Length: 174
Image (cartoon, rainbow, N blue to C red; front, side, top):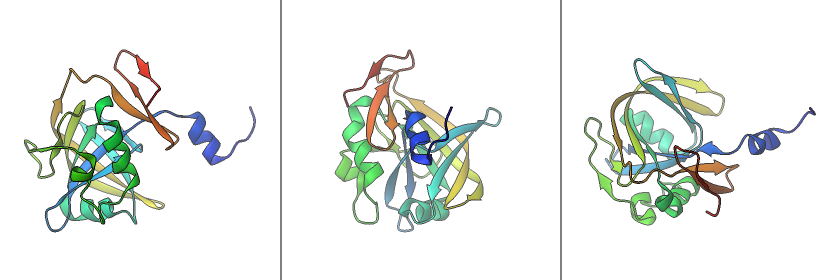
């Protein structure tokens, strides 16, 4: 083995599961952030953590709202999902620009993105400062899925998206 750079390590470690998190702004407008930095952190209670940069608009929304829905976008949503990870919700309505439909969540205020492979409704229970990001730890309070859309997206070093289903079938032509 040889010593490599941070960027090389991130690229070699790819792909990472790509997710979209919805939350609400101070004025109640739904916002979406594209995330590769998220993971399950507890089985009981069910908990997920998302990592959001301090300067991001979504950070401001999460601080205000204290809730999010983590959606795994399906292969069919790749263009909109990419837009949500590359544009700021300060300037645009990402639901409109991405062509996503909002559906009401069962427990939390932020909406679910219709057609997601899986959607986890979460209430923030803790926050951890981690350098230039905050880890928002959310307890999962409801879960939804679209089994007929089994392929969800993975980020390859923030350059492109690929899709993989739960059986390991891949599509690299995204």
